[in-house]
Length: 559
Ligand code: PEP
Ligand code: MG
Image (cartoon, rainbow, N blue to C red; front, side, top):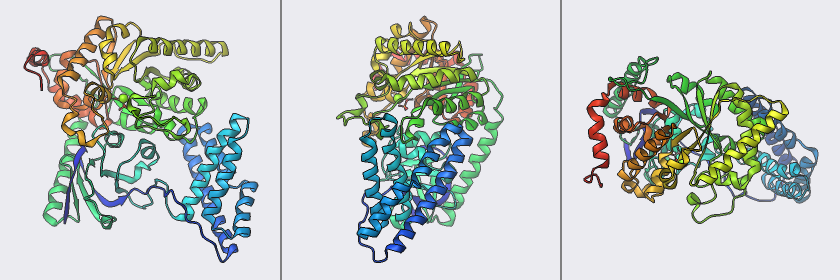
């Protein structure tokens, strides 16, 4: 038995085979082939497999997000069998005896350059498509599954760390749990694990060896322990814990349909954070009151090019209709920092967390913002929508964003396209500037949603991605909690509601504090909804409020 210790960031026990995440190799071997006919046949087989895979992806996209979503994959299918493309590859194999993967690589580069040099922006955008299709064929030829899980059974996935663009592409049905070498509790791998309700352990460093791959592993997300080939006693103990976990879940299930109300009658809304329309069944299954944060950037991360208005519209409409009239707050694009997207071609930055990200990108590149807002307002006709802007620091930014909303609404009216009249507009409070200016900002919006992951990062000047900062990254710091109280007071003075959508909202040791300062809504991972409801229902606010508020502001509370 081998035992490895990391840090648990998503609770629960899971058991399954250990599988290392396969990242596509960036170097392609080049060599001369002896049998060009056999090499051509090898290419044709890989090409056919790619076409079949793309057909399956198109079907999946059609079911999940409609015809427009499927079209991307169908375009890729056509590209894969384009005659000019095929002939160029055949020429390289026959005339220069080049191996198939190198021939595909060279042809892709040549076609991408050709597309990029065209005047028509539509044709320019095809450069990314040809690279993507070629990458798929090369992956098949080299046997490297691009970021995939090539296992017939679900696995415990191990990786050094996973970028958000990698996590979105994973087949979630194949993952029982995560282990990462690095990472931090508020990294997006940890957030994804919590959204999926599966255990995750980060920071195991180099303790996992390649030879462990395929062996049975048990992970315990509450202790951070990873056990490979557990002995009988350990396995028995951990399986009992898994059993206990199931029983607790059964108890929690009894709370479905019950209100989130304290013993002395104070209620709070409990919503969910999601990253995709696929997460909605988990939201409803856990009886949440709505969606408090839909991270729309995950739609962009999942595409090879800017998602069209129709593609986004279908995704937003699906979430809103599936939620059946319950409120859905969709956050506009929040990329930059740790969420990088190649086709945005953002220049390298020394300090990306403080750079061109989120609303800043939207205001600097209004065409992108305009497309997203049109999709959002069109979708608003199908449910109860709230739109919120991330990374706000100044009042002018909100005014400019709202102006764009007005422009979009006027356009839709002119075009006779329906949209909801009651769309709420909100902002995230995730910078100290926004918290300090919340009295003024409250006059511009319907709601605030506190992003405590970034608010902690910026208030404490502490990188949320840096695992080594450990105890310095402390969201319980009075500086953070006092800002939350200040935001809440300013919001309520102006008739604006306040939520928390950062990970801190799920911290049960702070639920009483949040109730005391008057937070109206907590948005958490689907799995946390019922434990949070239980915590609220056990609380008698009048017994703890005064002391908690006094502690929060006390001179002794300096940490
Ligand atoms: C936050 O910063 O708390 C938040 C909810 O946004 P994200 O984690 O996506 O940055
Ligand atoms: Mg944030």
